[in-house]
Amino acid sequence: MDAKPRELKEKNVYSRAVVGQCWDRVNPPQSVTIFSPAKINLFLAVTGRRADGYHDLVSVVAPLTFGDELTAEAGERRPAPGGQFSLECDDPAVPLDATNLVLRAAAAFAGATGWASPVKFRLTKRIPMAAGLGGGSSNAAAALVALNRLSGAVLDRPALAGLAAQVGSDCAVFLEGAPAVMRGRGERVEALAAAAARRLRGRRVLVFKPSFGVGTPWAYARLAAAGTSLGADDAERRLAAWVGGTAPAEDLLFNSFEPVVFRKFIALPVLLGRLRERFGLAPLMSGSGSACFALLGDDAPVAAITERIRDAWGTVAFVEAAAIA
Ligand code: C5P
Figure 1: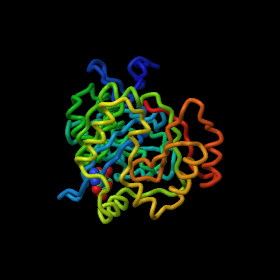
Figure 2: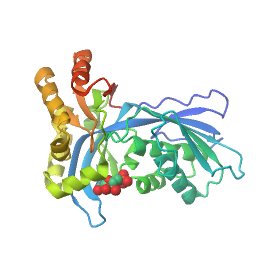
Figure 3: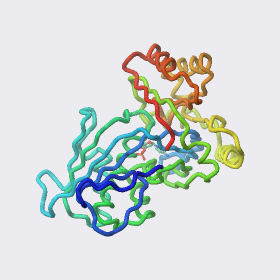
Figure 4: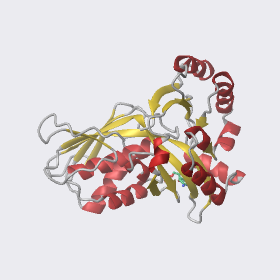
């Protein structure tokens, strides 16, 4: 990701970062603001069910230039009324209790490091929820990065990744800050080979979501009942062929969840079919949905595509033009 250089508004009081950025240990700030990107899955093969109830997957995940912003402000080291960590959010639909992944990540960080100071988090929410865009996981990763920054980087990258994986299956991938491959239940993350990542980074995408969301546990349960359409060996072969070749991002697109989610939510395949026919796009659902995205060519008629989406899904539909970071 194109990390912005540290910008000190007041010396050592305010600093800006992005998830995935490394910091030195000297003079930890008291307040840090972290960009918390949305993600899309360009390739998502759920390859089988595991004994622990989770599913194995192979996925190419890319952060976007679009996302939330999380500010973390450290207070004095004395008991804070209402608990060590607090969270405010501009979106009233976001839960602010211990179910929020920001607070779960903060508790995990304190448990692992002994961090004892109170911290106030402020979240500016832009990523829609129940969308398959990883908003909650991204916020959790941002919280870990923020706390680590406030602490003067007490945790190294592998330790941070280990904590992220405890908080959520697709949380650790947000520490990469660049397109990455996710395996296992999502916790095994490796950077995408540089030549392959170059074929993704900077690509423009239109992300769009209807007013309804899809629950991830529901989608996994339906997929488990239906059986997987792409096994682990085939998924790895397909991914390796794309990574080792020169084909554009469009050739990578695949999502195991589409058939099961599309069966129930037919507004999704109906619109995607129309975008294919009318604009020659290759749209795909992201994660377990309900958000979808389309990679855009330089001359893509974004206004006309947006109009078509709003025509099908109504003016309440979320539509955002962004790029792969
Ligand atoms: O790990 P996380 O809390 O994000 O997962 C949410 C739910 O999604 C899990 O409770 C599980 O039902 C499902 N899941 C899964 N396999 C994965 C990731 C998530 O079955 N690899």
